[in-house]
Image 1 (cartoon, rainbow, N blue to C red):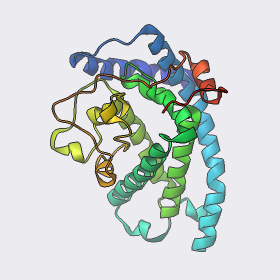
Image 2 (cartoon, rainbow, N blue to C red):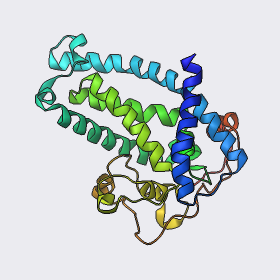
Image 3 (cartoon, rainbow, N blue to C red):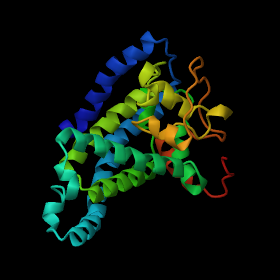
Length: 266
């Protein structure tokens, strides 16, 4: 019962909290057709895509764990408990380092999805012309699986225990919802350290100066390091979406990346 009702209850609670914050900041209401699509993604992520991704991740982590076991000379069941110098760090440092490594890998994967064939799957996430917290769920399963798999491999190779990764994953998810919220926050002096809603809304902007900017999910300074940071102080993004037309509806969008004879988007 919780498997069915949990995502619905979570959506209602988040609508009351993040939705209230958006209204306080003067957010505009999305089109009903767009909202129905995002609700479809939210439920599909919770009931289908999410569980399937977890199964595939565990399957894909088996050969990676075996490889680490061979290199480290430790039994495979101990690999999940962490290994190497990583275990000598205090818990808070383990958690912070896990976030940093996962975000660095996510940054690289995110940039890759903005190019060539991978963009076709990622374009679905960018197709929202009205960006708010619920549009964070608009993700093609391929766009969800590949970065998470790369992050899991990297964290496992680094030596992090599985339970540290288990704590980091929900934080990425919750912060992702806030990043998409229709609020003007840039976190003030921390704007160059932590990714903010304004920072990420510029990433989704369809304005020329914001193209291919702000890829980090947690740490904005990663974009500073790689020259992809864009966050003007006196301006807010106003135009979202992609150059091509994206069909409405969950099923139509899931098929869209594989449609033949589609003109290039960029």
